[in-house]
Length: 398
Image 1 (cartoon, one colour):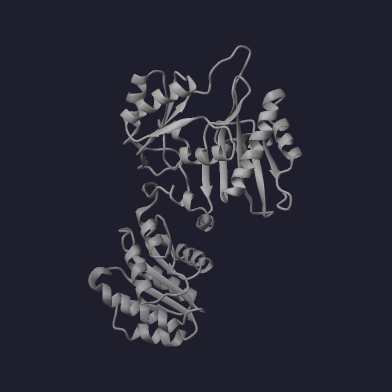
Image 2 (cartoon, one colour):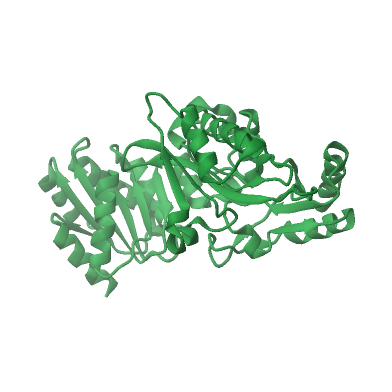
């Protein structure tokens, strides 16, 4: 589950991570009031107005701007709220901005002091099965660009799960970032608190870009991209309440409420499969047959009529779907039960199904299932082998 910047910062702050302070606003008037409050609390005269959407690169799309007075706060907030923000991480249509974060200006000058930006993230290294801190002196830039052009400027620190982050590792990170004096101490504290927040919140990623060294040697998170592990949300009901459904695909949200594992894709062949591994293989099969998968849909181990009908309705919400491939392995559930579920669902939906359906059932009672499909009198094509299913997909798309 992705969080907005202001939500991620609230979590960081609760674990002692210094953050750029800000107040979220739903409209231009609220933005002005937020700016006044920040000025009273922090003394800041300038404010940064940041669009709150689940996408990076907001500044490149005009979603992050500096306001030097209250008039500019109102004007800029009014421009950003309601816009369709297009960034390198959104579709061509962009994401609608519903709220902004009014944040304090932390790039203030001090005599003899300079600001520096760093990149710090915490995530799981799936190759080693250990948490890892990835960091770089090149903050404020796309880490992919840094990795491509200057890979030697990206550092990694792996954490032994038996002992956690050790003090010498935090000091090593501060040293590799070229810090000294109070900034060095601040960074070691920052890294330690950041890792504590990552573990305690059951996150799958914390990305802070940039981490700022202010002109007076404070270390703080100016941005925060936080992803919470969905499988751990039952332990964090307070975090679950932070979910913003406006930022997610409406079809995916509906599928989730029905207990279906669904991911929307840009293709023309709908997939209905049980098991994630088989679903991935089915998508490959569709590609080889000359089609493009329109979705990833795992119905799980109980593909009864109600569940199959729900899956049909979800898939058919996509107008680009020209055919549906059902690929079920009858292990936990018998193939004949699935076949009967397909037939019943098809009959219940009547004329709602206007695209060809190919059904491949393999496993327990697969032969009985094929008979049920073939004798149903419905416009459903049955298959028993992968290649046979591929050929039938290719035929209906021709």
